[in-house]
Image (cartoon, rainbow, N blue to C red; front, side, top):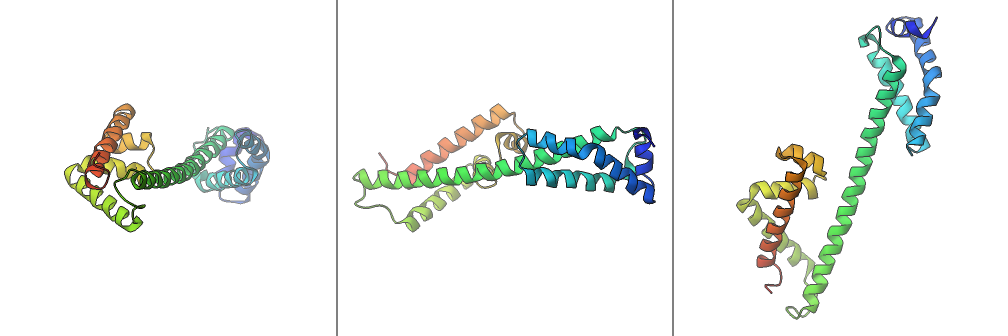
Length: 197
């Protein structure tokens, strides 16, 4: 049996299909694993992606075209799984970085407020958070689309590509819109909660 008849053998419902999958696995799994490792995927993640790829190939085997290039097909599935995993991990890292940045910003604002002479001590964090929440609620009423853009990025963790799709704008326009939204909220926040100077 040659690789030319692998798709037909894989589509069968008997033991021949299992043998075809094993042949495909033996022919391609090591290359898939090495390709993923070359892209700095950890060994554990690479092994999971390879396993997931062959499980999906097995599940879709009867829907594959008879002339499909199975080696290209499994590589495409592995690549998509790697990209999905990378995006997910990156989203988590970006969200953690934003959380750290927000915490540092809030701390810096508290220190600046405490040393500016407008207050005698660092603000009570509960009062600070309440004022921040009230300011954002007011902003949401006045500028619902801008507030939504800020929430998509700060709360949902959207990147600029996802934000542009959600807003129906180009990436550049979405980035500019978000920048203007943040500036407008900063002005409102300063009026309601911050140093009037």
